[in-house]
Picture (cartoon, rainbow, N blue to C red):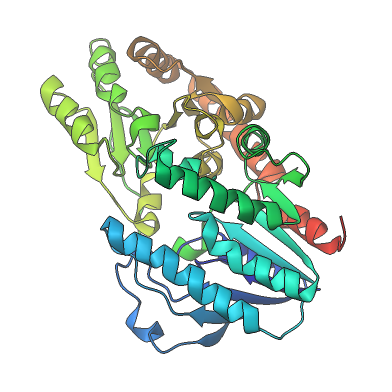
Length: 399
């Protein structure tokens, strides 16, 4: 099968689309990717890629399109989005090579896959969209725009139009379907739940696992935003250390609530037990996982986004650790089905109670929970299992 892939991000940028394409190629498919020049996470287009328009990576043919580099200010992000939108539409409008199907993966923003609709219409093939992020609710959640404002209404019509032109939509979380039905009003589409696999291969590098010393150690690695509610952790830990002063909570990440979180640690005078490292690149952060006793994932109820499966939860399952989950919806169901977690309510008292409960478990119980999580990952989220489902969907030429 000849597969055309459209995604704004690709290796050496750290996204799972690279792993999926590599696996499809390994299975004998002819895979071509249309993407941008690598800049995400670098604040500039990598020097060695400034003049690169085409390359082959692990047998996958990759076309690199011009775009403005994404930096840390909002204006550069907008230019980054729009530049790939226009360049990909222009390229795919004139791209003459024939393919059996076009597969796109949408993170943010949905407009990045618009060119795939142009190609599919011109060549009369299916466009299969893998939806990893919902628009226009995503920029609302991050407070980039206000819901029901003029810009939201523009994005709503634009996003809905792009989704409507896709032939099949793969959903990375089951509850995404509610958003397509209830908000976007797109009931008459082909939907299928296919989660995203965890990202590993692009982030591997040599290094040593972090040693924490004696005590009970919990790790959270991810966004420190409103819907994660991480600012509750210092208050919960203040209660925990009244009973056990050898419990330590390690946190890696950044986000809109970072200042509030750091302020709480200082106010409560618990920097000895709540250790904040700031942002650490994924390729280095993975060395913090192996020697902790438990992992922490949180996502507070907040519309459809608050009910989804966080990507970090899927990664957590691979580390064979028990998980403390402050989560609802699809994420909660994954943890319950896996059988390796303690689920807490999103309040200080319950979080503290369950940290203590996790610490007091026998080592054999914690090991069993970790094994359960890993086995569930292998059965449901391993790369080969995910690509099996993607491949089967791509092979069906007509709906």
